[in-house]
Image 1 (cartoon, helix red, strand yellow):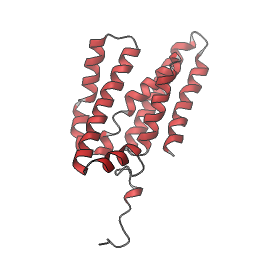
Image 2 (tube, rainbow, N blue to C red; image 1 turned 60 degrees about the horizontal axis):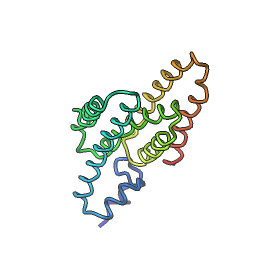
Image 3 (cartoon, one colour; image 1 turned 90 degrees about the vertical axis):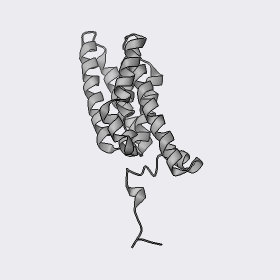
Image 4 (spheres, rainbow, N blue to C red; image 1 turned 180 degrees about the vertical axis):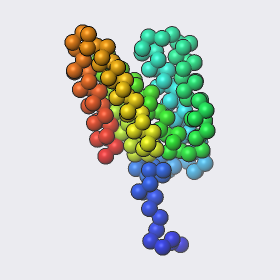
Length: 173
């Protein structure tokens, strides 16, 4: 059966048609199982990335664990767990902060991780939350640049942070 000229699910970011994670999960499992596995993946990913970020800025393991749990299982994230497009965007903010920190501290693995997360998020996450995470990471970039301005070495790190955003957009294009 057809609905007039079809249903443009590929044009909707809610569906995540071009996201390879969605494609793999939905091709290997039935819809309900794949949906739940993706939810678990995004919540664990958000917790793990938040933990890495908090540890990278020098806080203790217990502080990082508490921060990771508070972020990943916060009221907003749990409330929107029924919407996969919103839930898939919860990994962007900690990945963005970790990537910016990685650019300033010369840790390439954090930079690459952020680029991959941003690219995947542009293919299947709620675009408003991705944009908000990019704005917050831009503010964090300015904060770190101002702090390193005293040392006169901030411009290369700012350019690296901007290249993160461009690399993620290129992966998502």
